[in-house]
Image 1 (cartoon, rainbow over the protein chains, first blue to last red):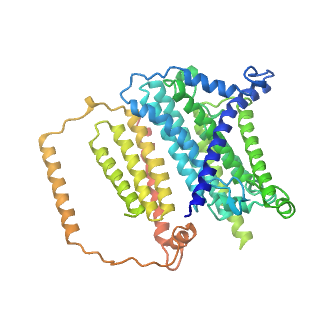
Image 2 (cartoon, helix red, strand yellow):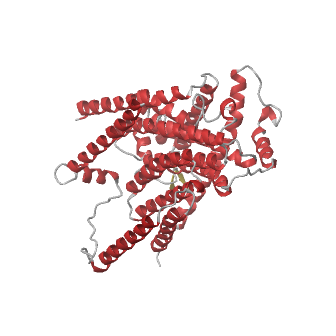
Amino acid sequence: MDSTLILEKGIFITIIFAITMLMAMYSTLAERKVAAWLQDRIGPNRAGKGGILQPLADGLKLFSKEEFLPDTPNKFLFVVGPAVSMSVALMTSAVIPWGDKLHLFGRDVILQATDIDVALLYVFGVLSVGVYGIMIGGWASNNKFSLMSAMRAASQMISYEVAMGLSIIALIMMTGTLSLREIAEQQAGMNWNIFYQPVGFIIFLICSFAETNRTPFDLAECEAELIGGYHTEYSSMRMGFYLFAEYAAMFISSTILAVLYLGAYNYPGMSWAVENWGVNIANVIGIIVLFAKICFFIFFFMWIRWTIPRFRYDQLMRLGWKTLIPLAIANIIITGIVILLFDS
Amino acid sequence: MSTVLIIFYVLSAVTLSTAFMTIFSRNPIHSAIYLVICFFSIAGHYLLFNAQFLALVHIIVYSGAIMILLLFTLMLMNLNKEDEVHKPRLTRLGAVFSVLATCGILLSIFLRSKPIMGDYDTTGEDYQSIKVLGKVLLDQDNGFMIPFEFVSVLLLVAMIGAVLLSKKENSAK
């Protein structure tokens, strides 16, 4: 491994980290603006022009608040909880192909931190570890309500992970690879997976709402029953980490949705653009297209939040176990039969 | 020392110390968390063998599913120090004796056994690739297809058994 490669990857990872943070920061503002728009209000508009500095003001407020430690015998785990949540939310971005490649300074820069053969499994591994942040934080708060909320969040995430995994199996049977880069390359032009796997896409979309604890599945947070949520005892920036991790997770799952089903960085006429405008311009447009798809999904998350009322907890579990999992299994069987009939 | 060797020693130190802490820590939740760290370092060992698939499946199954369910039960039971049952002296003596006997057997095995394989030979195949691994596992002629299918039947039987057990408890009410 030569030193230029390490430097290149280092710079690339730093840029991705910065973009993820920026997207998470501005998602908080976007959420309030979208909510205001849907409810016919104006929304935050005091800090900066049209409220553009609002996330910075929020961050400053969180930093200047008192850091309160509750009377708990597990001070260390109490601090570890939000840290685990945050780092897990950021870790997934390592395997995502953000674009094809750029030709810079006489070398091809591949726009992906690392292309491993089992990238999709890596995403699921990171996802399953994400539960620990919430569970450890909720338990270490030494508060019955926090514990209940953490249990709710964790059991919801575990249940929907099963349906999510099953919906992905049908996709893998079709693509024949677990590498996200190869999946992205197979969807060149308008050959997107959503047209071949519409049921899988819908199951995956519903499950990603449950995985990120967003409405209509945000039962882990509830003022009336739980006085807040798993972060009731948290204050200052530790609380901010939990909230921030939620937005980062939303950004990442929008990215995964865009890469798996909506053709990643591909757009119609990309090969024509490569021929006529050169590699760099075509791929910069590709990155912009990918981010447009991501922004659409982030908007979709918010749109759902202010449109659909939340579920009851037993309805949530019934939907996960009795509807989505059988549907995903049926989808696998039908995909298998179709592949057997038409591919051989 | 090469980098791989340094990583191996660090990982081994983490594995062993967290495994010991799993047994020694008084708080059951703490020992469960130590066990999770132990599982992660074992996944690191798999990565040193270039077994990416095995490492990730290990993380998903053990750290992601089994340990979370275990933590669930532990957190909801809320065990305290006062709940700890004091075992009679005879049981303790028996435990010490059986541990010593196991140690003796293990020691004799390690001292007397000889390595069968002197050197590892390279087959030239890339076992990092999940495609090669799938062919080895599911090839009909010289693979492990039949044992693989038997394992899935075994899992199915275990699942049905678990459902049956939980059903029985309901009807007994």
